[in-house]
Structures are given as C-alpha cells and as structure tokens.
Length: 82
Image 1 (cartoon, rainbow, N blue to C red):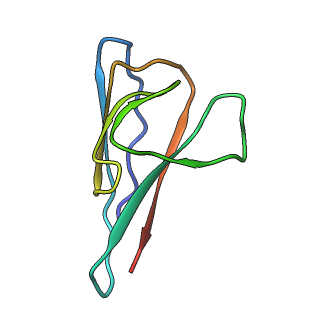
Image 2 (cartoon, rainbow, N blue to C red; image 1 turned 90 degrees about the vertical axis):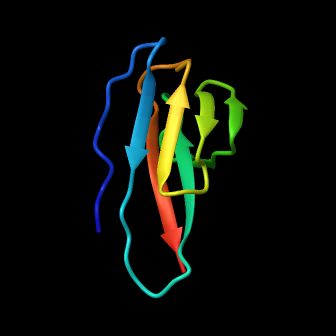
C-alpha cells in the first residue's frame, strides 16, 4: 500500500526504508538488494554486515535500516507475502 521513498545516503549516514502492505495476515517481509552493475540479480538481505551494502537491520521487517553504506547506486526492494 506504500512504496519506500528513494534516499541518497552518505557513507557515514543511515538509510531507512519503510514499506506498507495490506491483506490477510500474517504478512512476511524480505528486503532484497540489486548491487550496482548487477542489474536483474536480486539477493535477499540478512541482518548484520553485508558485503557491498553496509550494516543491515530489519531485513525481514517492514522497515530496513542500512548504516555504514559501502557502495553507491544499489537498489532495494521488499517482497511481501502472506
């Protein structure tokens, strides 16, 4: 029901993405990354330090937080299912 907003995050900052979804629950969330230069390849994120991404938290929630950003021009999406 609500797409995450785009963000520009400097290496010392934190990016926070939130998605809204509706439907019969329970809903599950899985954030994924498409690394710059690897268009079409989406990889599910896990919490913790993720190579070429940064420090991830909330990988399976409706809110993803990334600090210590390691690379520019990565894309993120959230797959929601019930």
